[in-house]
Image (tube, rainbow, N blue to C red; front, top):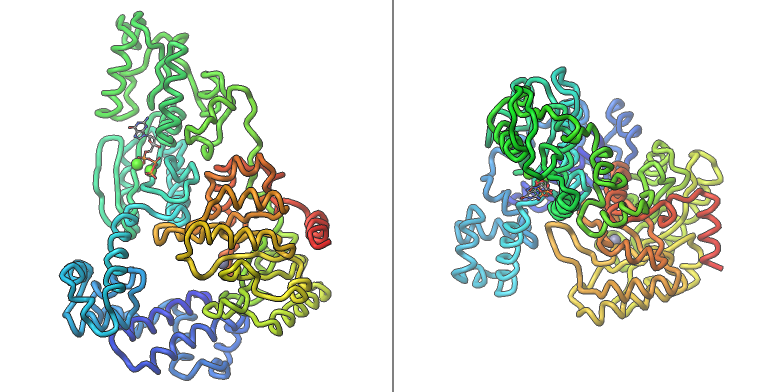
Length: 615
Ligand code: DGT
Ligand code: CA
Ligand code: CA
Ligand code: ZN
C-alpha cells in the first residue's frame, strides 16, 4: 500500500470509531495520524518501517506505528476489518448523505433508533429529527434534500470511476483468442462527465467463451441478463455494463450506433435516408423495395433482408451467415467507422463531438478541428501539496510530474482564508516561494516549478493577499471557496472583480460544482467569460473528475471568441495528476485545439506568457 492508501484506512478507522461513539481522543489520533503520514515521503516511510523508527514521526504513536507497518507490508489490517464488520452497514451508508457526519449519525441512532436511510427519511418526514438537540428544522431539511439528491444522482457514475473499470475490461476482452476487436462505446467513449452504464462492443467468432469471461469477472456482483449474443452485469458500485457481440462485418456499425449519442444517431440516419440509404446498428443498405439475391440464392426485397437481419442478430449466434445479402454492390461494406462516415460523405467525427451539436455539418465541409490530445500537454497548473490540503509533498509532486515527462509543474496551494484547507499565511507562502526557487536552482528535477497560489476570491471580490505578496508569485489561480449562497448577481460581480484584478492569471473552477453531489453556485457564465476575454484572463478547465468545471458546453463558443483555457488537474496527491485525461475529454467535447490550451505550450513559451501577464 502507498502512504496515501494507508492514510485513507486510518481516516476510515477514525470515522468508524466515531460512529461507534468511541473516545474522541482516540478518534482524533487516527485523523491526526493520517495527516502526519501524508507529510512523510514514500521512500522515507519504507525506511522508517524497516528501522522501526515510525514513532519518531510527530503524531504517530506506537499503536498507530504498528498498524501502519501491518498495512504497508501485508496490504490489510485485521483491526480495520473487524471494526468494519462490527458496525451496521446502514449506519455506514448514512455517511454518504452530505452534512451528516459520524457524530450526528451516532445521535440519530442512540436517540431515535435509526439504523439506515429508509428509517431516517421516515423520521425526517415526521419531523422527529428537527426536535433533537443539535439538529433543528434547517438540518432536517438539508438531510432530506441530501437523501433525495442521492437518489437522483445515484443512477449515474463519474466518468473517471467508470473508465477505471472499463479500461482493463477492454484490454481483457481484446486478449481473448475469440475476439478480433473490442471497444467501450456509449457515453464513456464520448467522454461525458458522468456515465449511466457501460456499453462494450465486441467482434468475435464464437460467442459463448466471451460471455462466460465477461459474466465470470470477479468484480461482477450480479449477472442481470444473459442472451445468445449479449449479456449485462452489475458491479459493486451499482454501475452496470452491457456487452454485445457481433460478427466482424457489423463491428463498425454497432460501434458507431452504440457510441451515440442518440441525437447524433438520429441526424446520421436522416442523412443516410436523404441518400436513399438506411443506417442501423447492422449496416448501411438501400431503402428501396428492389430485389436482390441472398447468399442462399433466393430473390428477396431489401426490406425483407434488413428485417431478417434484425431478427437474426437478436436470436442467433452472429457467426450465422443467414443475413448476408448477396448483392455486394448494393450493401455498403464498411470495416471502420472512418469508412462509415466516408460512405455518407463525411470526414471522421471523433466520438467526443458526437452530441448532435452541429458536428455533422462541419464534418461535411471537412472543417473539423484537430482536437487537443493528452500527449499535447507539457505541464499543469493548480496543484496542491501537504503545505495546504494536499497529501503528497512538493518533491513527490514534482517527481511525479517529471515521471509524466512534463516540462513544468505549477504549484497552487490554498490561500490564508481557506483555513479549513490549511491555507498559507503570507510568511508560509513566501517561504514556499523561496523553497521553489531553491528547488529549481538545485536542478534536482528536470521539471521546472512555477510558484503560484490558489487565491481565495473574498466575498466582495478582492483577493486574499495584498499586492506586494501577489507580485512575488509566477501566477495566481483565483477561486471562490466560501459564501456559495450569494445570489447570481452578487456572485457574478464578485468573480468579475477578481477577473479584473491585474494579478489574476486564471480563474479556478467557475461554478464550484461537485458532480453527482452538489450544484455549483449561481453565476452568469457568459458575463464572466466576457470579462475574462476582455482582461486576458484564462479560465481553467478543472479536470478533477468530480468537477470538470468550466463545463464543456461553454467552451466551443468561448474559445471561438478568444478565451484561453488551462487544463488543471487540481491534484491533491501524485496520482491526481493523471486526472488531466478527464480534462482532455472535456476539452475535446468543447472543440478545443492545442492552440486554445495554455499548458500545451513549451516551458519557454509559458515563461514568456506569464512574464508578459505580470508586465
Ligand atoms: P448513458 O449510458 O446514459 O451515460 O448514455 P449512453 O449514450 O451511453 O446511452 P445508452 O447506454 O442508453 O446507449 C448507448 C448508445 O446507444 C446511445 O448513445 C445511442 C444508442 N442508442 C440507445 N438507444 C437508442 C435509441 O433508442 N435510439 C437511438 N437512435 N440510439 C440509441
Ligand atoms: Ca451507456
Ligand atoms: Ca447501455
Ligand atoms: Zn479550489
